Image (cartoon, rainbow, N blue to C red; front, side, top):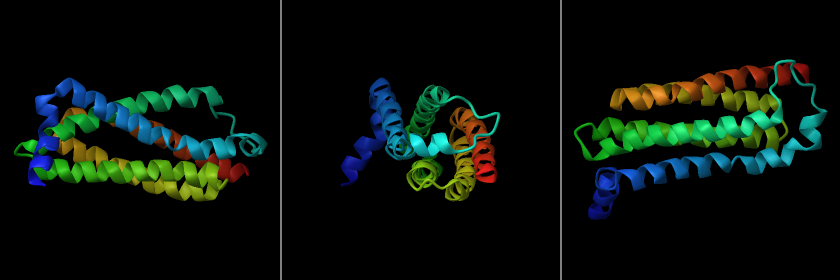
Length: 171
């Protein structure tokens, strides 16, 4: 068991390009899993909501999230590389925080679109925002570049929080 863990934690060192691609692809796949819920509510329900004037057109979300998930993958890879080094304990904590915020990210899609509830979405996204802040701090402690790569994600989720709030108020 410990040999398998050792091989996994040293993969970024032994195969940097392949492991970077794995990290980015995994983040894209996990991030895209939320679209299952989005598709459930995007049709007539979402179209029936009164949208705030600053709501972007629907086509904007796909490219933005794809870009953000790629940045998250690179950031996670930078922290993953530290699992085999002297900063391994901080890297493990940071990656657990990262996993937790990702669960919340998908949970937001389930709450807002799947449950068709701006109120539930607002609760989840508020917790998600706090989890992202904790992840930025955790990543920054391991590798400042990884923390910096999460800043656009935090900015977008900050905007999305206000957007979600506005949907809740208007509907």
